[in-house]
Each structure stands twice: as C-alpha cells, then as structure tokens.
Figure 1 (cartoon, helix red, strand yellow):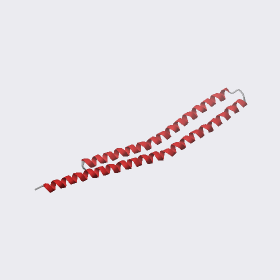
Figure 2 (cartoon, rainbow, N blue to C red):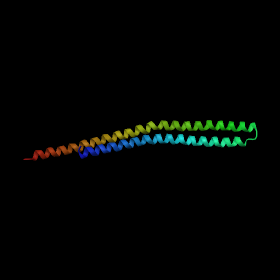
Figure 3 (cartoon, one colour):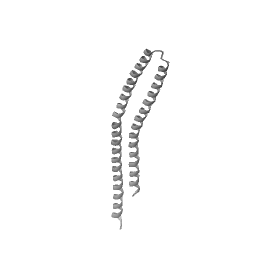
Length: 131
C-alpha cells in the first residue's frame, strides 16, 4: 500500500471514530438522564418516608401520600418529555455525523485520486523523455 493510500485509510478510520463518538455521546446522555431520574426518585421516596414517620394523624398520612403521588407523576412527565427530546435528537445528530463523514471521505478519495493521477502523469512524462 502506498503512503498516499495508507494516509487516506488512516484519515477514513479517524473520521469513522469521530462519527461513532457522536452516537456514543447520545447514548451517554440518555444513560445520565436515567441515573439522574433514579437518584431523584430515591431522594423523593426517602423524604416522603421521613414525613410519613413524623405524621400525627391518618389525615396527615393521606395528605403526604397524595402529595407524593402527585409529585411522582409530575416528575415522570418532566423526565418523559426530556427522554423524548433526547430520543428525537439522537438520530438527527447521528445522521448528520455520518453525512459529514461521507462528505469528508468522498473529498479525501477525490484528493487521493488527484494525487495518484498527478504522480502517474509525472511518471508517464518521465518515460516519454527517456532516451
């Protein structure tokens, strides 16, 4: 493999890694959101249990549980919206990365073909001048 071909292959591999990195970042954001949701849920449940422990009457317990359920549904709705946003942007970002990668690789192939063509023309010219 010539140096030009080797350099072109290395650039293509490097660009493929960049595109995969973009997709990986989307999955990492999704996982981070899941972890944050779990953390908040655990804290909320712990706080509610402490409030229930300190309740003085059945009506206090009912009010605490009602508030807890309402807040759970509100948190679920907020996280669901955020998950939907993440899921909606992931394919767009991934396809943009791969479109950019494809364009860069096509440009690299054109540059490589031009370079090889110029070298071949140089060799043909040398052969034409040889005695």
